[in-house]
Length: 463
Image (cartoon, rainbow, N blue to C red; front, side, top):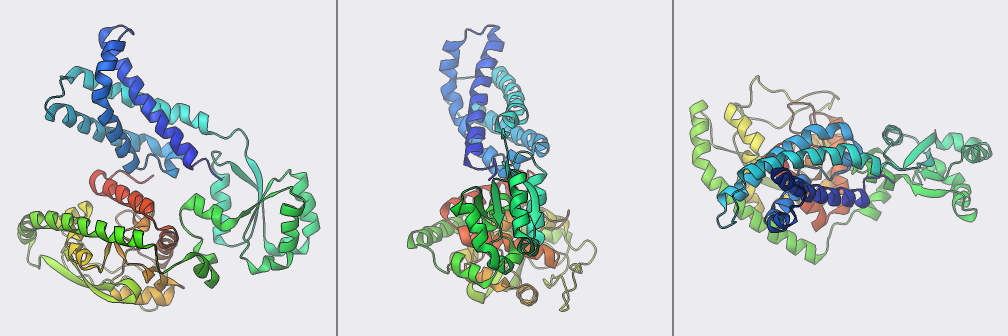
């Protein structure tokens, strides 16, 4: 329903490759002051191919093939510039540190990097928006009610790059009262698509008439609201969930191939995390000790799969102990975690920024209590409070929790916060968690892993 799917991503991918190749040819032509540089181009393009693929991987990890990168042009300037700066460093390391390449490209490389950066800006911000903008937009009606209905209506109509435009929004009560009037209104407005919240009980009496419009006299394309919402926002419409949604979309088991493969990856990843932790431990200990007294590690009683208790381990990042409770039992909306001023130490801030504070959890990964990827688990008292306040909250623990997850790479919090700080933010996280549980696969885990590396290593703002 959006120009943000596989076709747009493939077009961006091919366009980036073309830009990289053309930039190399233009660089050689500029140095030779002649366009007849085909021999030199043929000799050097093979040396640059590994760089091209590395740059494409960095682009992917930086979110430059994400839906937001395709739909929102204004956010790309800084992201492209910062990502290309990293690519410059990688290209320099590739050519200057690897022996036997048979090239000394100091001037050529510097010139190439400037030309390629200009080419990427021209392609991404100039040509691609013109190629990808749909010539026509399907005229649609959104039938339903609730905050997610309003959210989808606003999002789609605020961006011309979507292939759908909502001409009107109709509540079930309005449609039920005057169905014939609205059917005529649809024809007058040349509507071609009905996006319907089929699960809404208020629509049950008139669903046969809606289906007749769509199937008996195929004037309209019928689209399920749930599917479009997930495609646009990459999360489920949480407030509209009913018990039957979980029966139809959530499974407590996955294929043996996925489970075994995921466990193997967890073991390998846990061992690598352990190596990093062992190397970092003496430096972290000395740095924390220089700031003041306190333990090197902290232990936290957290939620595990199926609501079990697990004891997790982290490098201490706080000046004071953190009870993990950011709201009272009354769960008043807007309450924030009560923290002492400057509760995070300077060393702790660095550990959190680099995610090094999480690495001792390799112990839990190797034990099989945590996965590298899955819904982020709560400290036990906080999880109890949230499960009392939010319907279906404990269902997120039907899969093994993870150190990073779909919500962590997608949800954006208020500046300075690294986790949900209110009921509403936690509901949003839950919507992402249910999306992951519904769609979990190796492909989705790879996406999460790459974007997590981007956050850890590059700290490029999410698109």
